[in-house]
Length: 236
Image 1 (cartoon, rainbow, N blue to C red):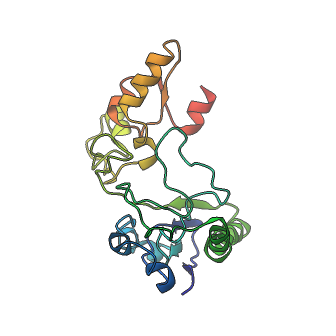
Image 2 (image 1 turned 45 degrees about the horizontal axis):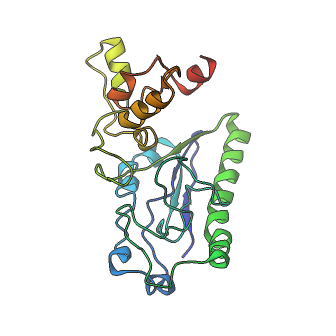
């Protein structure tokens, strides 16, 4: 099976779904634990959530293989994605519940990880780069949207339950508009830094200023010295 499905479209938007795949090659599945074969950490239903996008002309890049084979949302050199937080690896060895994915002695070694990079990671990201370059060449601008989903309760990563609605709440409060249609979701990156971590950081560095993106949980925004978009945070 190919490591991805690509559906081109005429619009400047490319939606990448790196964690929606569920396929496990037989040779790998035989080495995995029984719970791991159910691929519970899949970004479930993301492809269904965006099934309308093709009709709007969006380009779609959809992973076919499970993130347990290789995590397409990690750098190939194994650099930790979220420093200071619990992380899963490029080729994960534990689940979100911190349970082993592989039977004893069967976890992938360095050589196997390199092979998976060449077989799965590079083709996916090669297609991603090629598609973005083609869109920009045709239209002058390319927009990449990385689509994800996650369980609302993952104690390994988040101290509390993730809110069902987080994106857009800040703007809605600032504008006072009640007719805004808020996206039913939350940003898993910003949720990685809950209020307790901000409190701990401020305790260790009492003179430090805190800046926050509007997609952060409200408890974090309440402690922020400045709230703004990524570019606004940099400018500030």
